[in-house]
Length: 403
Length: 156
Image 1 (cartoon, each protein chain N blue to C red):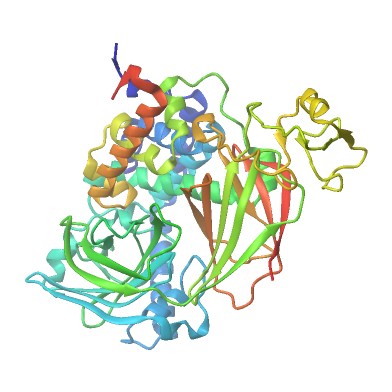
Image 2: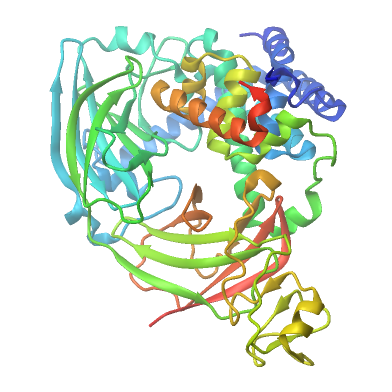
């Protein structure tokens, strides 16, 4: 018999620790409330100074282009100097009664879309008053905006968003972020839009993307435009180290485009069950404490290894075949139903400007993509740290670039 | 918005904030840190909130950003991870929690916001800064994944 799923029971009740922290924080805010006026004044002095600084650094009235936004991006993911030549221009013009929208510049590098969308509202006051400001955060690059009499920032209605036009492109837009805004003297809002993409049922990013320019406030697509993929270079990295106990790194590649570097880790959880096929004609090697059965006596960590017949190997009751020399035993994916939360972090001395990543399912298991500043030279070595359930396991692996 | 109203609305939202934070971080201590940072940031940035009707979704979105920032920082600073993390108590999860925790965050968070916290599709879309259509898709796929995990005895 089927029963109704009781969502309301999830994550109940609120813990005492959480409740106490909320109360403590409200109390802290209350204590500082007496200084509120001076703090707000200070905040707006800083804001004003920032506007002045930007105005000084970039001549008054000059319009920010996509490269200007990218070079000043708060995330610190910097493009190459020559990246500008890859930017496509004048992609879309959409004139409507209430506003004119333009996709002035955009680039798609197989991993992300970066676009400069300009919106000129017909009536800026009307537009500004109805916009929810929930999209503005401290790390957004706000170059110049209007403020109302209360000092609140005014932005026109409708942040631009991008959506794949049609379902046949096997691509999803992971998220759309407006990460920069400039209001020009002419009342034009120039917005830097950033969208990581996720591939669906395909390994290769399409050479061409057809996209809707979507108006978030009206929840409707305005018009479509097409982007071509930029040039890119790719390097493959191999694990030359001891295998990890809880994961198999299937492949690691670093793709460099003029706009960013993307490190992609394809990995699977190790099998926890005993299922493992041993071949009768094969000689195996194992240490008493190791989890793996090996076929290469010189494989990593094989000091004092025992030479085993098929029967002896089976009797050792090991859980895994070594993924390096014995191969194949770690193909099974113990997915997130176990609450594994397996993840990687990167030794950021090898690749500076760590930005963040997004995870997707892949054929092998899971795929994590990290974004870094664009670089012209591939590093020779990358070190990955294994994180499990939010904690560093103490395990790291070194990966060497394949020449 | 005055402090007393801010406090009142935060307290009214506490249960939803807790569920949002814990579903992303799966860790009481981290959820506490995230909500503290989110409340301080929200109070400081209250002048950015144009329409107070959006307070709930605005604060939830700040909290989600704080949760993600915390995850990012922890992955970068492994010593913090080693010393500061307190795992969620084992055995405390019920079936639905276990199933939710097992699916990807991009499906889990919309499910929690919509089904558990009671936000509409439009509000969930605003919180997560994705189109409403995307939310509908993620809810649908998320429910499918939950169904698969909870097998045929459960009807969503």
